[in-house]
Length: 322
Image (tube, rainbow, N blue to C red; front, top):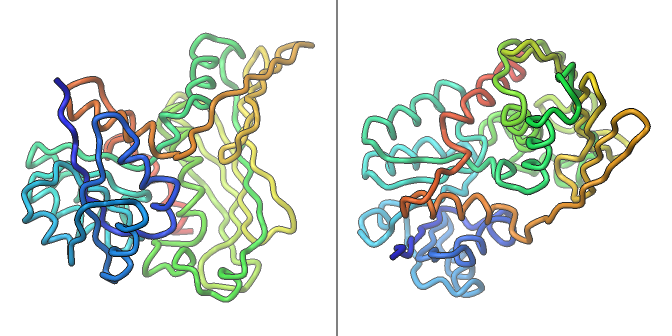
């Protein structure tokens, strides 16, 4: 009989309201057992809204409780390493928001700490568990567009009011590890790693065009995968319009879709065009959470680990160093 996995959650920010938090108590054989936040009152309010039974003053109290089976670190990246190493030392399985760490070296250190205690840990690249991306993977793997020739990523959007006032933690490198790219661009890199393999070379031009904050807001990059496939990417977070597209071109056709939207996956071969409308989860983390719960119960494996996300950490740091 499957065990009910009791989750502790560190951080109760925006991502936990709909995207992740409810997934822990809606997934099968899973419950959100307790929460903590650096501002205790915020954790209390969250617990009331989501009917969570326990509120902890700090992660140390959560770990010491002895009733928590796994911990979700939902804080900004600046505190991931501290909290993750505590979990590794206590041999508590851990699900870590992306990016896993502020640097590639820190990601490696966290991964080695969990491996040293033989404790599983996962990265919150939840798109690996979504139906739309697994449909694309199936199309590629079955040769629907033939041998892959190249791919292109595009993501443009205007700056938010919070970003323009330099008030978002996402544009404060000491907390986020970089700019907006480190929050959203890494999702695109990870899903392309899932679809096409490891990237072994990256060249980028990173600039700040808007002047609202210190980190780059516009990036143009070229990538080479281990299998020889080439990819280009353009990101702009101060643009006057919105565009979100992944294009994968093969010898027989192409696949297009958005990374963050819910539009259909489009397959074009010759004069034929097919669209595939896939289900989009209400709580985007929930499908991946379910794979973690199942793994902890000895049924299957989660597709997003600290090992699978290591390549994205390396690539994103190369872009940040430009």
